[in-house]
Length: 327
Image (cartoon, rainbow, N blue to C red; front, side, top):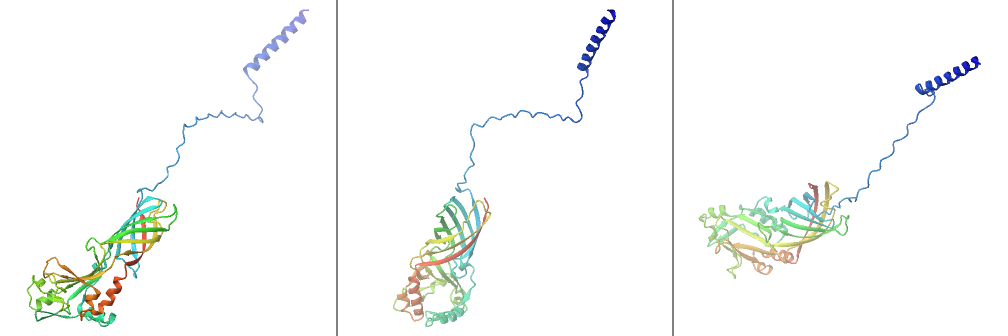
C-alpha cells in the first residue's frame, strides 16, 4: 500500500513539473515554418467637400507677342519695323504696327537723272532742267531731289477668326502716317544752291515762283525760304484696310508664330499737288488735276498717268510676319 501511494505521488509531481515547464519555455517553431504578418488595416481619408475644375484660358488681353514684319518687294507699304499683337478672345486679336516710310530711306537723285528717267518711262513728258523767274534763268539740273512713297506709319489691325482653333482670319483696320498724314507720295528738292548761284538772296527764296500755265497765273509753285520745293500725291489721311490672312500672331501654346497677310487699303481719289510758299510761309497746296496738267507744255505727259491713278481707289499689300510671344 505504501508503495502504491509513493508511485502515485511521483507521477503527480512529474505531471505538475511538465506543465510548469511548458508555460515558462514555449516550444520554438520549426525552421521550415514561415510567419506571415497580417497587413495593417487601411485608413480611409475623408472625401473633399468639392473638386476644383481647371481654369479655362479665355485669352482676354493676357497674352502679348512682338513681331517683325517682312514686306514683299512688289507691294510694300513701307519698311516694317515692329508689330505688337494681343489676344482678346480665341476669336479676336488686335495688332499695332509701325512701318518706316520709303521716303525716309530712298537716296536722292538730281533733276538731270529724273529727266532722263521720266523721258524713257513717259515719252512726251519733259522735266525742265532750267527755270526762269523775272527773265533770270536758274539751272536746277544738278539740284538733288528726294522722293518716295509715304504710305508707311502707324497701322491698327483687328483679326477675326471664324473658328476657335483656325488660323484663317479676316482683317480690318486702318493706316495713318502722323508725320504727313495725307501724302502717299512725295518729292522734295533742294534748290538753294541753284537759286544762290543765280543771284537770289538766301532766306528769301520763297519770293521766287514758277508758273506752269501762262493763262492761269495762280497755277504756280515756289520753294520755301530755305529753298526747298515740294510736290506730292495726296489722298485720305486715314486709309481703311481690309484683307485676309493665315496664322495666329499669338498662341498660348507656342512661343514663335508665323502669319501671312494680303489685302488692300483704300485711299480715295489721289491728286497731284505742288506747294506755293510765295504768298504763305506755310505753303499753299496747288492741285495738278489731269485736265490742268494736259494744258501745260512741260507736264502734259503726266495727264494720262494721273488720270489712271485717280481711278485706282486702293493699294494692295502682302506681308509675312514672325511673332515671338513674350507673355
